[in-house]
Length: 135
Ligand code: FES
Image 1 (cartoon, rainbow, N blue to C red):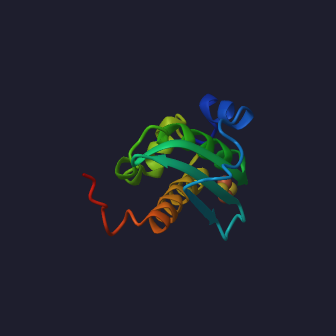
Image 2: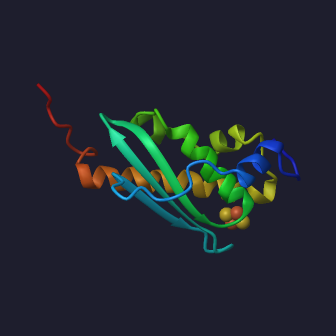
């Protein structure tokens, strides 16, 4: 999908971003930054029974980065960790109705923030390597 302008959905998420803020008792936090543009993104997730129940973000960045973060929090809620791991920046772009080519990296930042938050969750809860046996 090639375009040079922001879609209405991007503008809407930029002007009215969902789930902005911090989750103080987050189960996972992902911090990422793009060294070229200098934009930074922090994603917080709450996980219950292997499902992401809450997601919030703090993004210091461009409009596309804010819109990507916002739509990402909507996409991941209700997903299992395994499902969330399959989420790609293309899914973010699709949910936003496209992004200008020069802004694709902003959606990659959202994918990376999600990965990092999941890695953080797994490192804290040991879910990556060993699955606890539940009886
Ligand atoms: Fe770098 Fe948007 S310009 S994240």
